[in-house]
Amino acid sequence: MAVTVTHLKSGNGSGFYEHLVTVLGPSSYATGGEALDTAAINALMPNAPSGGTIGNDVLRIQHWDCEPTPNNTTAVLNRGTFKVLYYLGGTEVTAGTNLASQTPPRVLLKYGNVSA
Image (cartoon, rainbow, N blue to C red):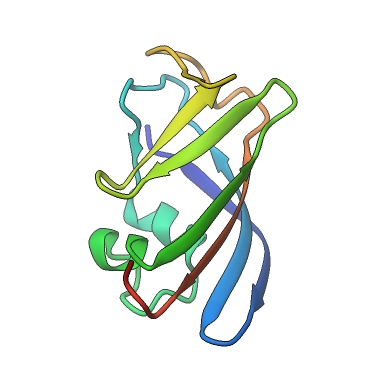
């Protein structure tokens, strides 16, 4: 199951966009992370110039700041694999963990027209 992104709030500045989102994990987590699909990318980056393409748009993310959930779960973006990994207290959650039933982590991300 894919990562579910819910857009909460937007802003923009000189050459960048800023979005606050929740990043809900799947009902059965796969070790090594969950791939971002086009729907998740479009929710993460509604102003993306490439219309949700995995490589071009994800590489435009310049800042990903995750607020831990009440149980200390965080979401980390692996820019090399375009996957979101979930950690509980600094250790990747185990395979099969039901993240869909938990409070999703909130992420503040910034992106712009410059690839990183």
